[in-house]
Image 1: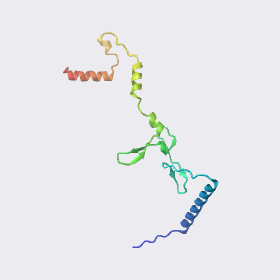
Image 2: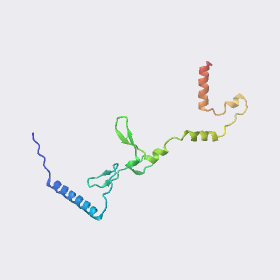
Image 3: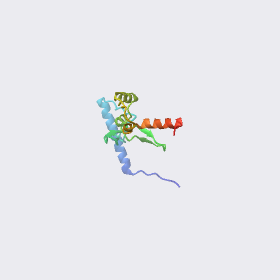
Image 4: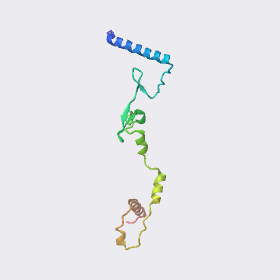
Length: 144
């Protein structure tokens, strides 16, 4: 079966007009002494050669930002998608550095335990980490 490709006259005419307008723009630019604008590799351009800015909305700060602010991430299914948060939101979302946490822990005064009756000691709040350590020590020590 043979297939004949036909081009509509309106499409051919439009393509010729676009090519002529591009030639006029480049000739005018050369006559004016302007250099051709540098095309960035990361940018996206439309059919007429104009740069297209793609913007996304950050899901955290709800601001419209350029696509370059959103990093790429490889998903579990193998697809590569954009991060939902912009670069400033991602940089501020990380946990504090260990040095800062140690300084904050060192700055807090440690409460001194008063020597009191055993009934009064039960009323003090118990640290969960300390309680867990005591349970583990008791289990490994063989106490019941």
